[in-house]
Length: 99
Length: 422
Image 1 (spheres, rainbow over the protein chains, first blue to last red):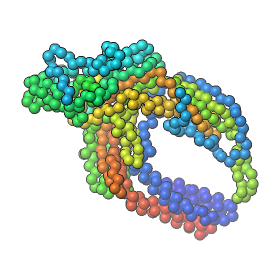
Image 2 (image 1 turned 120 degrees about the vertical axis):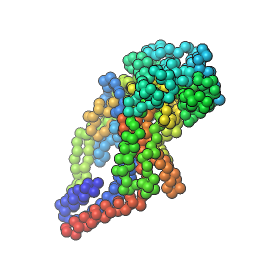
Image 3 (image 1 turned 90 degrees about the horizontal axis):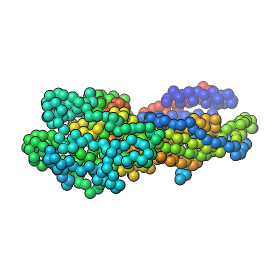
Image 4 (image 1 turned 135 degrees about the vertical axis):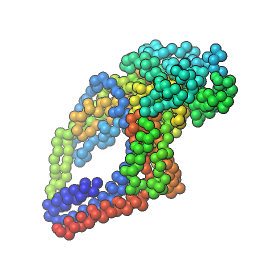
């Protein structure tokens, strides 16, 4: 964790230096690092985020996936790097059920 | 109080599954094919009289030897095992599974059935009371025979199968000691002081092991980046994207073998703010294909928790897990959507499911910790078959804060040094 934060600091400094001067926002790295260490250690001890990965650890036999894709529109000039509500990998997030 | 008939009087107790089957149909082994009977008979009829005798010498002093996974007679040292459940249930092709089939040990719990069961001792005829909330056997106080609950009384106490412990107590202690040892520095001081790995107990936890045959449909939108460009200059430089938006639909047919679902209402609640049940859930899966037919002697020396949820209660959990599996299965088919996919609607059709109630072995270390007037039981659990360990160790917030501040100070010092040098 410490190494990551220090690498980040070095990279940020290099970037800031390249722009022609040191940036005061680098000073937030200390508190941010402390917060990250606190949270990381707390999770390591308490393991509140863990559960059985039944999606991967159960014997599943699936037929080939079928489907349909149709282009519906184009987006231009968005600043968003991802689609809104991307849940491709969040398999446990339930969405509207079709009965 | 429920009274079982005396053993050896020529009258077998009524078959629980038949009695409770609303259709009144007789119980026959299930094949998993269309038109099959909805109840799988998993009774261990050899033990219905409540006396589990050594096949070689007839003694009733029997217990599990975890290192071998076998029952052992404490008199003549003869070892044997009950038949695997898989061998007594014709599994068939899961893709042909239709309707809901249930093991006779997984039928609905009859709330009218008392947890106190009176058995007549086969040795002397005395009446022995067993509280199935706490134990599954008792010793006759007159002739010292050991009596065990082997009949599938519909109170959730006797499942279809049991997966015997394989990890020994010493092994479990070593694993828990290692797990806690790695988390000593920032652990709550009272936990460190009170920690005794010897206090780990072997518990058979109740689960429903479910096979499912299902189809799923998911619908949503996905985006593919077509262009990326920047506008502005200097500090006002911004990145913009163009993308094509697609409507995406996927369908998958699949079978799931041995999904394992908590059948105790208390254990099924996983709210990290008030319990650590997720710890016990994390040590799944078990090698449930090696589960054997029920024999209460496997529980000798261990404790057990009773099932208190029926198949109807757990259907939504099954559907939820099948939907998650379906979403996982279709994930690779939408890799081309490099800006992600937003699934918006989903459907699951469960064509068939097969439910078997099972006791699974868990070594459990529990520690009650109170902080700020709020108490919580922290578990460290070891899978009694695979040895997988997971746990929750209460933290000392003061130590954690000091550690975090120390690291933060080092980083800040480094940053200040760089800024000063520049």
